[in-house]
Image 1 (cartoon, helix red, strand yellow):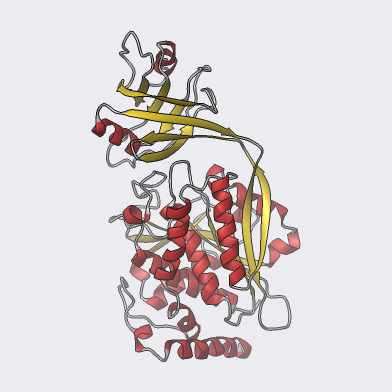
Image 2: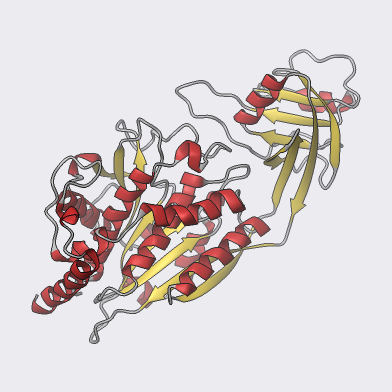
Length: 445
């Protein structure tokens, strides 16, 4: 206990110097429901994390790079950027490669805009087609001739042959869209499955694409499709050893996935978790700890947790046993109005080292009323760790009614900084995870 007190005390002194004993660090936090009651070790974290610095990284990922599809050049650009940032922070950075399935992607050029979407592997690939769009609604009634036209089909019923019929009638390409109505979220791009091969490009476009095409009326578009094979995705792992000598006290991990779905710039999902991880790597890099700090950014989460599962499967039993907790951050900054609850999501709904530390940090910072759970929820990169009996949980802003209440722009082209990111919520996430991860890293044993 004496060494731990010394450790957190030393960290607090460093934090006090950094803050210049700024009383604002003890003031009620923005968006908090209560006044803070900070521990000494909280000061150098909550006083230094800055959402605005994290947002600088988010602009690179979401706006400069855009969609980041696992195993493709777009994800590799993001990989290189993340590795560069972490190396500049003097972490030991490892790139962990793993193979991923083929991708079927497309672009749709409409005036001065180019949209990214999915392509069907049953349609023509590696080709480009241009033509006027004709809106065929759900395809129950088709004209006698579609030669040279780009057919738009929306909410096609199960079992319909409309796509095959449109190609047979001479369509130069087929666009398939799915439109949902509130309270369901908007639909994103996808790779359509067909019952037979067709000789023209078939694209799966997002709801916003359908809406914009319909609003434009008569318009000519150019579409292209591509098949990407032999793909390799990467995890980006950065580590800093414990600063105090002695026995091995393990490692604390802060993690997120940096890929996105086709057509989406992935600002909140999961650019927000990625830049939270980078900002905490900046703030925690020089603070004293008994445990090592490891920051992991997963590739290809959107294809089925491929990166995190590969990482966990490569861990020797002794290495897995060293991990004291995994703080997985997925969708931590949405600006969606009803998403006012910060959820602690463990796979089985149970309390573990990560959920307990975040709940405790929330109480100390005055955010107790905003924090809900833990409740059972999978669907993110904490799952493989849980399966290996490693303490792990996902942390995310969602609706008060439950963690199933995601923002409607989730997985869509509208998951942008302007439309779906709140710097204020990102700041709260930074403070909660930063204070929790640092406290766990300062704990012996």
